[in-house]
Length: 504
Image (cartoon, one colour):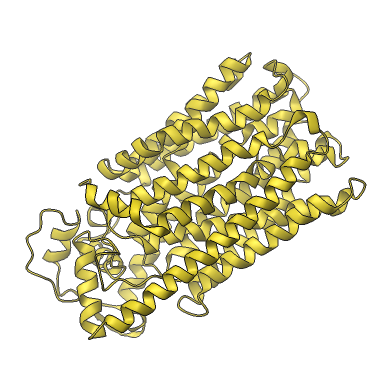
């Protein structure tokens, strides 16, 4: 990888004469342009065009999906419970029900992402969920808004897995952490932006009940963004119209070095079995559960939590902004470090361990500080926003370290199954009988972060030792690398492809 970056001219690795019918969709295009020579300046130009085309769309869509799924948080202090006649634990169930829909749709969404044009599918999904969100004000009881949230979860289930797959299709392993962080950091921007909109909605005194405006505003933005995405989002590097023929060839050659191929629409059951037998899959699954149990405190319940600290209604909105800023800055900084120092001090896992340690500190303070220390507890809550950095780096484990398109999407689906399980459990730890202390919720946050850290360390040790074992068994490093690239374009998994090395 380093030699490709530093050399003035890059040359494709040797191509095999295989006629496998199970190869990558881009294999024929890759074979057709075998031997293509291109300069480092040309590669940078192609990367720049890809960034300009993809990142703004991914940025906007991801920010809006985060705002949309957490819209009940901003509406909760403006009469949502009264307007929809919620009682007891019903508000908590609205958060959990969203993730039941997300969970049920996870595997159909993964299959659709494999079979359908990815860019168009994601754009249409954005349009549909925007329209659905705008119907939320029509809900007047728990049953109605619960169905609305369930359907919203089903539709939004495609977004994060789809974006992870797109990141792997368009970028080299080295480039992925910063690009993934560039759209995942919108969670922080959405928290800040949502807090500002929530604050502005608080000053509306006429027309509809204030809680309704939250859904109408966010839904309208999503529909407009979906229209633009339908025009702008590409499907594959080999068919991208914004690139010339030569630039498309360079785009495919660039990602071939990942030894993962680009995309295969053929579903392969042996790769499903490999995913089920792979320890990485289950470590990622458990890690996702641990990471997401605390998530409701930073999404659906943030306004309520800040209110329990002793701040007024408007304060519950603008005091979420610093937490969003922590998430935004930590994600971008962590993504930059993991990309800039790729291959040094195992930067991805270093970022994950650091972020999780900060979260454990924050959750520990929420458990231990007295209720009278409202500013100390608020700062502790803000520290927990480092969790976004840890989870975004875990997504790069899927995009950079899982090969075989079916195996990648199945592993991603299992990771997001754990994500859903954690997000279903989390809201239930906020027991209305414990308000305003919510001691069970804060203990659950601390336990979740601790489980996450243990899984991160175990995953690192496993992948590190596997790399060392493969290095010992490799006879000729250059031949192994060339074979690894070829096997990636033939849609081989990282387990079968002995030329594959994990990016730590």
